Amino acid sequence: MVARHDLTTDPGLQEQLLHARRGTAFFARKLNELSDAELDGDSLLAGWSRRHVVAHIGYNARAIARLVEWASTGVETPMYPSVAVRDEEINFGATLSPIALRNLFDHSAMHLSVEWRDLCDDAWHHTVRTIQGREVPASETVWLRSREVWVHAVDLDNGASFGDMPVSVLERLLRDITSAWSTRGTDEGLLVKVTGTELTFGDPDAAVAVAGPLAAVVQWATGRGTDGVTGVDAEGRGIAGQVPAAPKWI
Image (cartoon, rainbow, N blue to C red; front, side, top):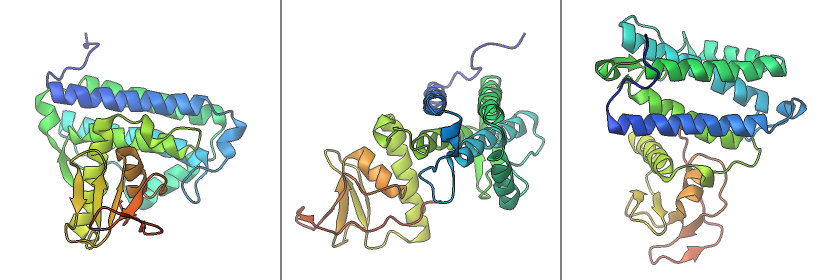
């Protein structure tokens, strides 16, 4: 009989799985608060309705489950054949009936959770490949899903905020984003400071820093608004109107 608990014994991975599942539950709650008619409304993402966001999250779970199956079986099963196919899938999902769209989310999330649950410790170290072409251990799939559900719960534009996210999720998200900027060289002249902490990222010689509480800084870094962040000069003084647009993340 298959175990009804996660097979992994790694405490760090167990904590990450908990955050991913809590993020999924949070997304589910914000989705369930929306009426069927409200699914037709705009999301916070340009060109996407709430339907697109829900479809994306549903198909994303299926895509990540394919990576987990790859790690389990050794048979290569890519997330998607191509980015174009992924985009077509999302656009199709957005046309589903409300009940079908909700079922897509529910069933795909459950399937992914079961795939994670039944993956043995050794298989978590097996290498899989993301749609961006990065080769990562299967354990990375947990974070890939976690950031999707937490961030896109906000994109439903139904009252969720970055302040609802666990601090550890926010910190890792900010490290991911600033690392991507650094890799592309798009953080030149940009310093990011999280007030009340030692968290600082970017160019230490930048003339102007972007500063604010952790949740506000992450919101800005993901391109979802500047509320709560300010431009700060080298002496730590606020500069009106000096909050630059965040570089592209993904």
